[in-house]
Image: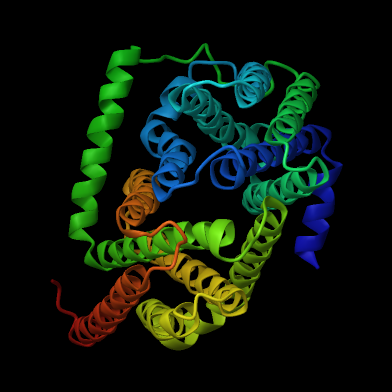
Amino acid sequence: MPVVRDLGVLLRLRNFRRLLAVRLLSQSADGVYQVALATYVVFSPENQTTPGAIASAMAVLLLPYSLIGPFAGVLLDRWARRQVFVYGNLLRASLACCTALLLLSSVPDWLFYASALCVTAVNRFVLAGLSAALPRVVDSERLVLANSISPTAGTLAATAGGGLALGVGLLTDGSDAAVVLLGALLYLFSALVSLSLPRPLLGPDLAEHRVPLSEALSTTARGLVAGLRHLAERRDAAYALGAMTVLRFCYGALTVMVLMLCRYAWSDGESDGLALLGLALGASAAGYFVAALASPWAVGRLGRYGWLALCSGAAAVLEPALGLPFAPVPMLATAFVLGLVTQGAKIATDTEVQTSVDDAYRGRVFSLYDVLFNVAFVAAAAMAALVLPSDGRSVIVVGTVAVLYALVSLAMLRRRRTSARLSRTGAKE
């Protein structure tokens, strides 16, 4: 098969293998660190976990991606990318060690969160740099395949890192500091592997003309505004993005609820809670995998809006049916369903944006997409912090989320009919 042959060629490219190793080590460390932060906030015996604390942790983990992401490229085009990987990972290793010391000490919560925020903020530069450097180690014919393999492998590495963190936490009797130090070690390994890449190889070409930094930053900001205006003119993409934002909000609210249930309602100790959380994450990941298999067929049969409507409608029915008992087994089934429908909807939305938005605006629209995706999750956590009881059992949250899913499903069915009518008549909105 051509794909298998091209994959074999890619893996024979020495510098591609090295860059991929940097990504795998870096993102596995991200997974370790994020799970360590989550378990400290949720499952630490020293802490009285609250939904507000969970919301704060999610803000620390996600907001840097949204706020820094659109502007990271401006700086990456001015710094040697190899050095970004070396110094970025060394900085994160050092900050992770500081976080471990803070975990072992009695310090104010804001200091702990500030340390964690610095670690996750640097991550945006490293990930963007990995994507920008990829064309420097792969020929143009195989760049699409490389772009498919590298991010997917990185996501799997982050998931494996999270699983490793849970395992180490169980083996060390819940020592969050030990888990964070494991993440620091992986960051250090990523920095060392980065040194195996020649510094000039990854670019950027510093000899090329560059505009002043202030002008580049203001141009980026104006570009995002232009992307928003363009999106307003592409109704199909705008509706899909709106639907995905609401679905992400629902997923975020239920994630906080499950964390609280694992911590207080379903377990007598930290180990039991961590094991249940691991099962919930595994069930959700299985749903993501099934969505990747089912979505191409479903979109082909139902269309993008039809698949979005089916995903939302299924969640509106199954989420309260499985979630209201607030029992572990039905909730694990809920995690699977929500993983499937959320990822299925995201695949349909990604495709809609890619096909409906002009190529000149696509990057800016996807930057806005990234902002909406993460801000919706954090907003959901903040909402849950206001209404969730201490044990996580909330009929209000389950019911509200079900109503939101149903409204999205109805809106997508209506949009599907409108798009079909416009397509038949050749009219424009």
